[in-house]
Image 1 (tube, rainbow, N blue to C red):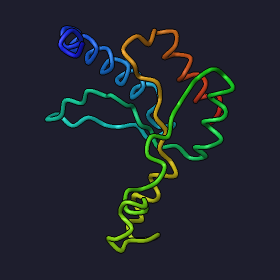
Image 2: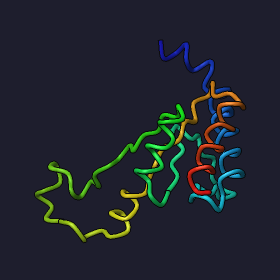
Image 3: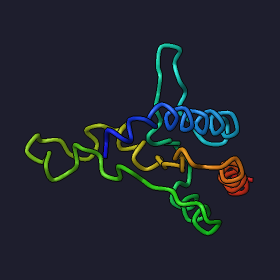
Amino acid sequence: MLLVKMNYIDRWTEARRANAAFYQEQLRGIVRVPEDKPYEYAVYHTFVVQAEQRDDLQRHLLERGVDTKVHYPIPIHLQDAARGLGYGPGSFPVTEHQVRHILSLPVYPELTESQRQGVVSAIRSFYS
């Protein structure tokens, strides 16, 4: 099955990159968006923004039919599996800050232009 999917990987990657570029252009200055460096080639299996009032924004989006995710709600150093390393709250303050602000937007390859615009409009309406 994966070998069959490999026939589509380039097309899917380009669609995700196009979706990401749209979000970057439309949402810059509203939420913190990933910025590509010239030497990078992100495939955007997720498109993660950092947003003030993240939880309220997520509810706002869901009420408008936009499904989002918080993919990593607990930093690795605070997960049970890492308890033996001796880290606790405050050990990695930047990571802990980001965990409270990250939100993954829809970026799947089949996302239509209308759906992308709907995501952007819903985010803008939240912050206006």
